[in-house]
Structures are given as C-alpha cells and as structure tokens.
Image (cartoon, rainbow, N blue to C red; front, side, top):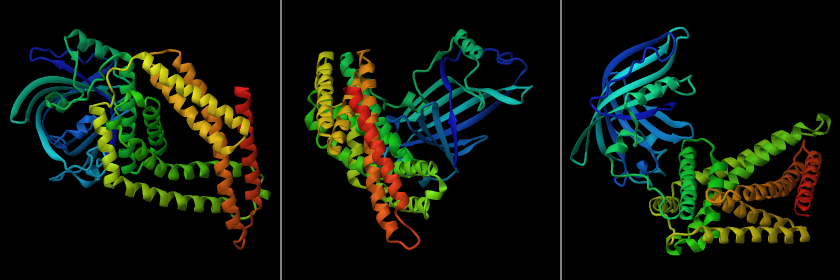
Length: 471
C-alpha cells in the first residue's frame, strides 16, 4: 500500500466562475493542463460511522488512476492510503477500520462522478511541482438523489510547505469562496459532525471530551495498522476518565454507566506494553553511562530479551481485546458521546470552576499527605490527583486564561512524581532480572545491583524536588 500526506484547499465556485491566470504565479512557471474523468464509489457503514470521524473510503476509477483510497485526518492535513483495484474493499483497509466502523459491515453509500480539468504548475528552473489545481464539475448520486456542482481543489507540491500566497489571493479575487465541506461526500451526506452547543463553559466540556474521543479512535486506527500510538492513546483515556470523575455532576450518570471502568480496563492493557517500552529505553540509557568494565555479563541482552518478550505478549493481549465485543461496545458508547455529549443541561462557568478547584484542593491535600508519610503508594496516588487537576485546568483554559498557569503547575508536579514512580517500577523490574541472572550460568547480579541503587537515588531525588516545590 502507498501512503502520502495530502494538504489541500477546497473552494466553492459557480458555473460562471472564470479560472484566473496561473502561469505567472511563480517566476518561470509552466502550466500543464489535462482533462480526466473520474468515478468514485464511496463506502461507509449504514450509520455513517466513518464520516463521523472525517474518514473516507472509496473505489476510484479514472482515466489515469484506479484502485482503493482511504483518507484519514492528520495533524498537517489528511493521510492518503492507497491499495490496488478489487471488487470489494480490501481487507488491509477494512481491518484497520474495524474500530472506526464499530465492527459493522461497510456498504456502498454514494457514487460521485467528476470531470476534472487538472492544472499542474511547475517551476521550470528547479523542475519541481509547485501546486496542482483541479477544476471539478461534479455529479453525485445518493439515496436516489441527483446533485451537481462545481468546485476547485488546490494542493501544494510534495516539497512545498504551503501554497503560494499569490495563488490564494488570485482565487479569492476571482470570486471563489472557501468550501464549507471537507469532502465531496460531506456535501451530499446527511451525516455531519455536531457542533458543541450551550454556554461557553458547556462547549469547553463538550469540546474537551470530543477531542479525547477523537484521539482514542485515532489510536485504535494506528494500533490496527501496526504503529505505536500507545502513549498518546493512554493519555487521551486518562484525560477522558479524569473529566468523567472531576466533572461527573455535570454529566448524565445513566449515559456514563461504567465507561470509567471500561476505559480503565483498556488503559491497563496498554500500560503493560508501555511500561516495557519505557523501562527498556530507561535501562539502555543507564547502561550506556556505566563504564564497560563494570557491566558484567550479557546485561543488555538479558534486559532486552526479557522485556521485549513480555512486551510482545502484552501487545498480543491488546490486539485480542481490540477484537472483542467488550472493546467495540466501549467504542460504540464513545461514538454516541460525540453525537450526543452526556452533559446535563447547560453548565455555567461557575459550575465548571467549582469542580476544577475541588480537584486542585484534592491534589494539594494528597501531595501533602504523601510527602509527610514518605510512602511510595501515597506519592503515586498524589500523582494521579495532580493529573486530574492538570486536565481539569486544561479543560477550563478556553474560558479562563489563568487556567493555563494552573495546568503548568500541576504538570510540573505530575512530571516529578512520574520520575519517582518510574524509579519505583524500575527497581521492581531490576530485582526480578537480578534474581534470574543470579541463577543463570555465565551471568551475575552485580550490574543489576548498580542499576538498582541508581534508580533508588533517582526516586529519592524526585521526592526531594517535590518537597522543595511545595515546601
């Protein structure tokens, strides 16, 4: 499969629109024009689940291109994933979409035919593509409805960071207006992403929840394609759980149900994988700083093999869970939350501030108790409370500028306590590895003992930092 990043602007124009001059957009430009006919058969679930996430899947038949194409939103545009021509959507694409389609079958939802005048603007001196302009005359068929319109798509070349400003200005002056629709299918479909309603504070809660849900679904897609979005997915789950706990009284408890418990379950499975990743990297760095003469035996090999083996087993458990009805049921609930956020009434800023300040007080109290007791478990508990206070401040940031400072404060505490917790976990792992090495011919536990002492010192340094911060 081929994968590319697409960045484009779409413009609405009518039949009277006259395409502006393109050959002087840059000095020495060449413009190549070609007319092609395209036919796109779009697929989605009957409920439009892919469109809910801005995902498009279609079979493309044209004068110069055929096959399947999947488009997924990305930070800098849209990722295009292409597969060869087949009668039905290829498994390598449908399997990656299992979470986004909630396990439902994909069906043909629309056919769009386009007559495209394609203009390729190239720099004749540097022999590179600067931009491509597509003047599309579109005819669509959906639900026995026939629609027709004209639109312009403009995409920078692969090596260009952005479209030439002169090109954008010229289209604006010619009467083109930025399109209200992210895609041709969105123009004709009744499925649309809901806009948060209510007061500003209520919109802040809704938007924050939606952002985390989007990150969870994006993580699902990445995991199914074999990439590693585990950290980002866990963070999104933590943020969503924190919102449910801190702002629970603003939410519909019947709609919430046991979502917190289900999110905790899946985050725990991801955590087993993530902990191995963190510890492997941590120990590799530590070993690299030790003099070679005191690294006795195959320490690096032992650490890598043991932790990688455990990580692969944990990753297999995650994959199995993602194909379960339990997990797909959790995603289905989160999908409903995007359409109908589980917010009771219209929360005011006072409501939101009250609960966020309560999270701040709880974090301060737990931190003070943990420092006084010097107990590792209490420090870990305080870390989780600091996270909730930080995430609550992040949620409030759109309606309260002071919240950014609060979020930064608790992030600092969270980071220090995170360093402490990483050291505690590392000590447990090193103790287990040392026992194995100590009973294996050709190995001994000396170097593990050095690493253990190093982790104890790091954990104590983190405790000292926290005491100084709050002292």
